[in-house]
Amino acid sequence: MALFGPKGKYVYTLDVQGMMCGMCEAHVNDIVRKSFDVIKVKSSHLKNQTLIYTNNELDEEQLKNAIKATGYEVRSINKEVR
Image (cartoon, rainbow, N blue to C red; front, side):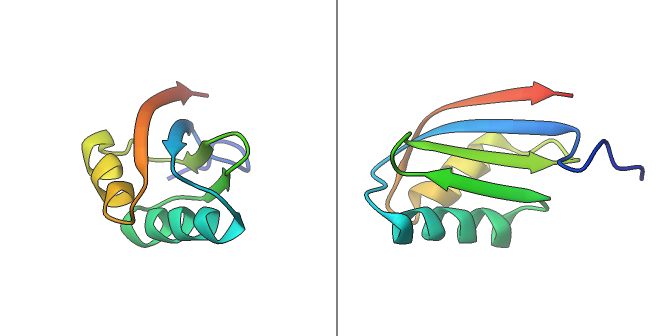
């Protein structure tokens, strides 16, 4: 499989509510990394946002449920194809 640039073919932008600090960001990032095949994930509690870079489409319902299990709420998911 060819890589589509350094950050992948798909970019998912999630509106994640409930993150209050850097540790919250780390919890969200860790569950995404453990649950899905991603290239990069980064979260910002200040923006209430998580960005996920991957070469594979993700099951959005599973993504919401994985993050919800850590105590945070995903209000929306936007998928961009590069």
